[in-house]
Amino acid sequence: MENQAKTIVTEFLKAVQTGNNAQLAALLSPNIRWEQPGDNLVSGIKNSAAEVFGMVGKMFELSANSLRLTDIKSVTVNGNEVACLLQWQATKPDGATLNVENIDVYTVNNGEIVKARVFTADIEAENSFWS
Image (cartoon, rainbow, N blue to C red; front, side):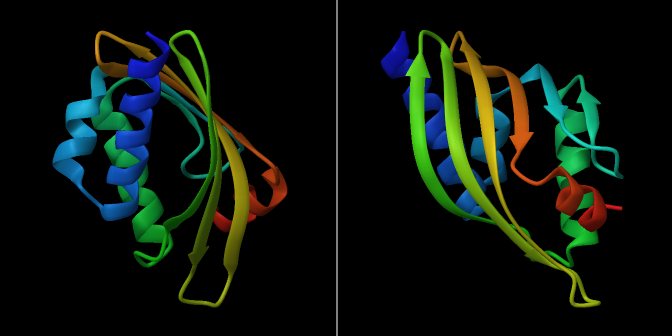
């Protein structure tokens, strides 16, 4: 179970880095629960893959398509949960930048990511950037 969960999440993160939307859609449960931290235009709970893709679309819109997962620092496993330390960067057209570490915790069941909880190292920076 642990190896499968790690493999699924690693494939998901690589698809994020390469922009492989078909692979992303295949790895996310249609009924995923995604918890995005903060008080901004993209934060809150998403209750489907469609809502997650809508959130990501808004992130790309707000960042002028500059949002990038620049580093996968660690991928750790406990049963069907996978915690990842990730580095994200983005720049807005007005010059505002985001350079933040997140810890994402993914839950994998039946070969799909069914839950994601995102923790940010700098909530103020996230709120400012995504507002």
